[in-house]
Image (tube, rainbow, N blue to C red; front, side):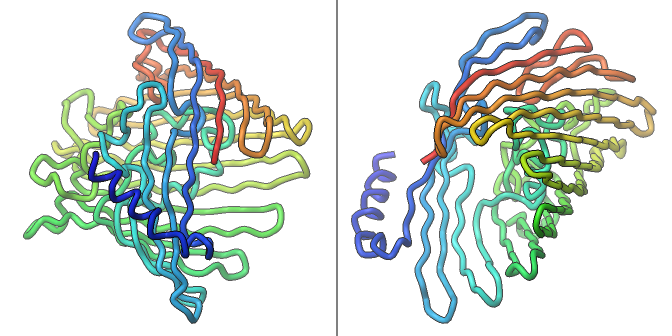
Length: 370
């Protein structure tokens, strides 16, 4: 840790001239609140929590103009728990993002390092990224809320052309002789014009958290929030996960309507599998410029093969966001989830499972960005 701060001081110490050119930026976000849940393992709870409206983070990003529209770029982003000062992302120093690359106005951007996969491009169509705190699709099964990142990744983004942009990512296994032993593929396309926006994304991962490859694309931060990373009937872990999603949004003045669909397939090590679909519709409305209201409904349905069990979940998210300034807001958000079909327990994202089929969650907090 001491060496890290020495390096950090050196970065800022030598960046005086660069800062004058606006090439190095320190940024961050702190979010914290008081949250309530009616049933976690049979008990209600009141808890102080960090990252209750976007996870807390700080980072450094910069660029150097190389001429001819070409720039060298980098980002180092740390996640932390504001309640106790500890590192997030399993203790990584820059666990949220850490990459370096080149960006061209003509040819696009290529980056190397620990990065988001392309499913995160759909987050803007979901209520958890708009107003609903951490109330993601159950277990964040589609990784739209970026529960895990991709190590050893190379990513390419095209320049925007008339509102259209495409991007792709590959995460290497770094395993000699084991090309598919913990690797990842991802791609996305986005389109924006006027009041309308839309996007589609794809993700494929092989052997995440593989015990035989701890230097692969996905290590240690996969599956800790999800009830689907093992087959409950066989206790078998994931061999392969495939995700596809499509979303869109349209703004009517101060009102925005969004829709998101994701399709997830878990192939387990014992040849069983789970197909899972998430459907979400959300609505936000600015009562006035500093006050936003939000409402969303999420339906999740799945089927295990060959067992035939079909879990289903209904979830409603609501939120109120009051902006004290452009950088500081107060929020109140709540969620209700109801398990149905063969699902026995409700399990709102980041909460322990309820002992019943229903679960309620509410949070009040403050967020500040810098």
